Amino acid sequence: MKYKEILNMLAPCGLSCRKCLFNSDGDIKTHSIRLRKLLGEFDRYAERFSELIHPIFGNYPAFKELLAYFTQADCYGCRKGKCKYSRCGVIVCYRQKGVDFCFQCDEFPCEKTNFDPDLKRRWINMNNRMKSIGVEAYYQETKDSSRYK
Image (cartoon, rainbow, N blue to C red; front, side, top):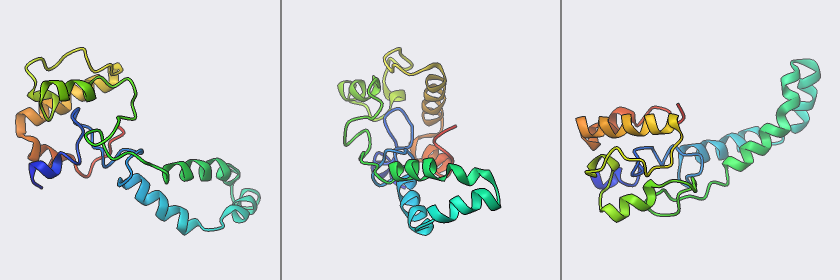
């Protein structure tokens, strides 16, 4: 995949927008819509299954509600819209700095992200990896892995 195409897939921080649960064209939304369709009118079966097979099926209403939420994803990616993580400092900073990714900034790593310690560690690792092997290679290396680690 070419660099310009990758910009539509990866946020400036390095996270995959396509794998984000809020992405309108993302895998989570796509698969949630498909799963919801496949389950059809499973409600009445879940109730029966909770008595006959396993009590876990009693949780189906909560699962169905979460699945419905996943199908309503409406973000077009951090570069095209408003970041769903309202405290994100990267979204404003990368535009001001005129870079595509944080590692391209001469201040990287910085304290402007507002990330929690876990996400900050991941952010540093992702950007160091992109800097080391290049954006295209990084995308190829991570395109099939989970966003939520």
